[in-house]
Image (cartoon, rainbow over the protein chains, first blue to last red):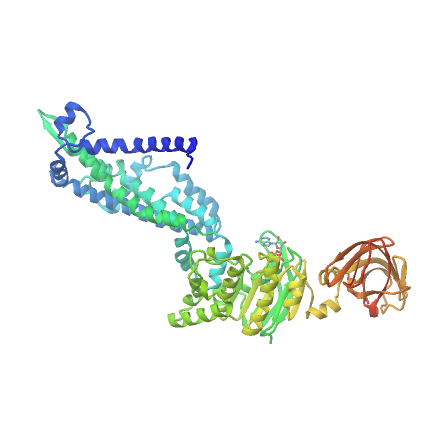
Length: 283
Length: 350
Ligand SMILES: Nc1ncnc2c1ncn2[C@@H]1O[C@H](COP(=O)(O)OP(=O)(O)O)[C@@H](O)[C@H]1O
Ligand SMILES: [Mg+2]
C-alpha cells in the first residue's frame, strides 16, 4: 500500500493535537502520585511516584472547609447534581420552547424567538446581582434548586433545536396528525427520537457548562454542604504554615484528576448515543 | 346523501391567494375520484381541506353524514399518501404501519394482525423490520400505501403519490393502486397533474383549472365531450389540435377548408378542435397536411405537419402505415368528431 504524503502530514498533525491534549493531563496525574515537597522542589513530574493511594485517600476522605465538614467526595456529588440538573432542564426546556416556536404558529413567534436569542448577550455573570436577589428572596440560597434554576434557560440550545425542527418536513407532522397524534405525541414520538443526536450533544455541552460553574455557586452558597468542585479547588487542601496558607499541591493534583471523572463519564456514555445517531442518519 | 359532499368550498390563503373558488361536488361511497389539472390549480389545496390540513375559508364539507369543517384531522378518520411519502424515518416499516393503530388504542395482537395483513397485501412483509431509508422508491411507496390501508379509514387521499417514481414503476404502481382500491373498496381521491394517470385510475374525474372545477364526469365522458377548450386540451394525448376559424350560419371556415351544417347557433370567431386520432386519410379530404416530422411509436405513428397557417398539426395513424417526411396527406374528420369553442371564452358551442 502506498502511503500518501498528505496522509502522513495529517497523522502528524493529529498526533500533535493528541499530545497537546494528553500531556497536561498526564502531568497532572503523574504529579498527583508524588508528595507536595517533591513538586514544590522539582516542579511537575513526568514519572509516577509512590504516593498515589495516600494522596487519593486523603482527597476523598479528608474533611475541609472552615468548619472542617465538607469532603471532596461531597463536592463532586454536589457538582454532579448541579450539572445534571442544569443539563437536563436546559435540554427539556429548550427543546420544548423551540417546539412551541416552530410548530405553534402563534402571533409574535419570531419576535419572541429573537427576544430569547438576545438573552445570549446577558449571561449569568452580568445579571448576577439581580439573580441573587431573586433567588434569595425566594429563599433558595443554599439549595440545589437555587444552584440549578437560574441557569436552566438556554438561548443557545433553543436556537439549535429550532433550527433542527425547521428542517423536518411539514408532511411528517401532517402525516402524524392524520395518524391520530396530538401535539404532545408528535413531540415525544417524533421530535425527541429524531433529535436524539442533538439532545446528546446539547446535554454534553450543558453538563460541562454546569459542572464548571464557579461564580454562581460561590455567591449562592454559604453552607459548605453545597460547595462545588470548582469552588473547592481553591479552598480546600491548604496548609497553615507559620500563619500563611500554603497549597498542598500533590493533593490538589489528585483532586483535579478526580474532578475530571464525572464529565468524562458523561461524554463517554453519551458519545455512544451520539455516534449511533450519526451512523444511522435518516434521510 | 353522498358519502363526501363539498358545498361551495372556498380557500383563500392568508397571503390573499384564492386557491379554490366555491367548489361543489359529491363523491359516492367506494368511488375512485381523481382531481386533475395543471400545477398550481388548487388540487392539493382542495385535498388538504378534506384532510383537515388546511382551514376551509368558506363552504362546508360533509363526510359520511358529518360536517367536518371543524373536526381535527386526527379525528376525521382519513388517510393520506403524500408525494414524498412522509414515512417516519426513525421507525421501521412495522411501526410506520402500526403507529396510527397504536394511537387509536387498538390492542397489540390486533395491530400485529392488521399490519401483517396489510404487509402481505402490499408484498412488503419481508421489509417490516427495515427503516424507510433502506427501501427503494417503489417499496417506500408501498409502505406509504400500507400505512393508509392498515387503518381502514373512511377515505384515502393521494397527493401525486407517483410523481417521484421512474416512468416504468409509475405505470406499474398505477395499476396496483387501482387494483388495490377495487379490492379494498375504500372511497379514494387521487390528485395528479398527469392526464394519463387520471384517465386510467378514475371512476370519475374532476378537471380543475384556476381553482374551479371545469368539468366533472367519467373519463370517457370527458374525453368524448369536453365542455371547454381547457378540458379538451388537457385530456387526451397527444393534445387536441386547435385551429382558428369563423362560424357563420352553421358554416365553419378555417385554415383553408369549410365544414357545413355545424350543429350550433353560434356566430362569430371560434376555435375548432380536432383530436389527432379522429382523422383518417382519404383521396379528396378536407384537410391538406404537408408532413414535417414522423414519430414512430411502434403501434402508432404521430405525424406532425403544416396546414396552411397552422404549424405542428398532429395526426395519428396506425404504425403499419408508412408515411415519409415531406409527403402530402389528405385527411377527413371521422364521424364529425370535431369540437367548436367560442374563441372569446373557450366554451364549447357545438
Ligand atoms: N401555504 C400557502 N400559502 C399561500 N399560497 C399557497 C399556499 N399553498 C399553495 N398556495 C397557492 O395556492 C395555489 C394552489 O396551490 P396547490 O393547491 O398546491 O396547487 P396544485 O396542487 O394544484 O399544484 C397556488 O397558486 C399556490 O401558489
Ligand atoms: Mg400539489
